[in-house]
Length: 243
Image (tube, rainbow, N blue to C red):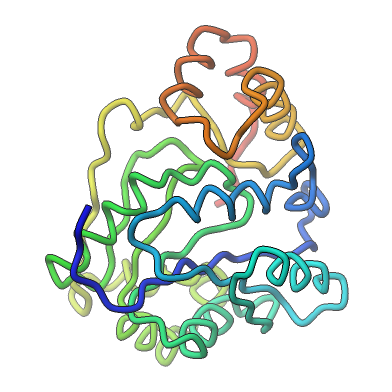
């Protein structure tokens, strides 16, 4: 995929103070942590110019800094709860023109979707592009720096600061927004591939036992395996996603 682009950075929100599954991004699948698997998958993107780990200034998150150095990716440390401030300042420090926002608990973030939404944003001069109805755990959001900066300046409500992009998509009159329709095989509500609770981690352990390599496995292979093994696919079927 050839794209005329500026500086495109993935910014990964990562911290260890998760409540439902403590220190989840450091849980291992084989010899790699969840966060390491995500980093190595993202390095296969054709559109990213760089990756930034955006973590907090809390002492317990020092290990995130170590991982950033190990994998030669950027690092920014900021507010724990004002994540919009953290992401904005990370983007500004690294001179990112386009930001792809990713959360560290989604190790199988889909690279095809990531590359596609960046392509759409650049070609259509959008402020914000994100997929809809995508399997939970595969998604990302593409944001133009100008839109992120405007949200940073104007967003006031706590949830708008914590979740980074609500101010943008709640104001379609002020931002040029596109909701991308993924291919039908990725639009599934019966599969959950984020890691938020123990049941999610149990499912990922089964995936690792099957494939032995979650860095290079394709999403198509994962979906086919889960469809053929419903007892595994539904391990986390009763988990309620946080709003």
